[in-house]
Length: 78
Image 1 (cartoon, rainbow, N blue to C red):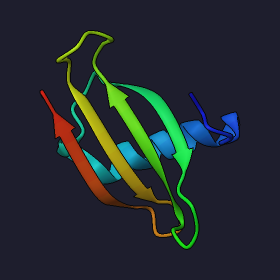
Image 2: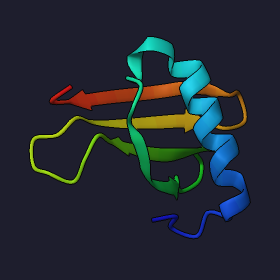
Image 3: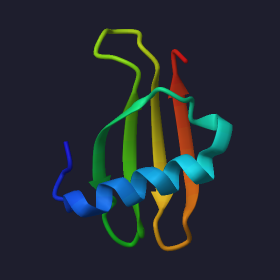
Image 4: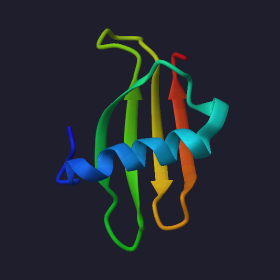
């Protein structure tokens, strides 16, 4: 679910989020959603999941694309 984010940007955003989040973003999670954050923010919200079942690991990442840094990371059931 890309929420109007160009498909060509998704891989770059995923790579940047994984590189800057380091061990806080567990291996094996799939990127399931990317959306622009409304101005004045300069970033994106990315959602990662381990599966479709309720209670599976989920991680939300807010990435500042201009500075290439994670602004917020929230994990649940990981």
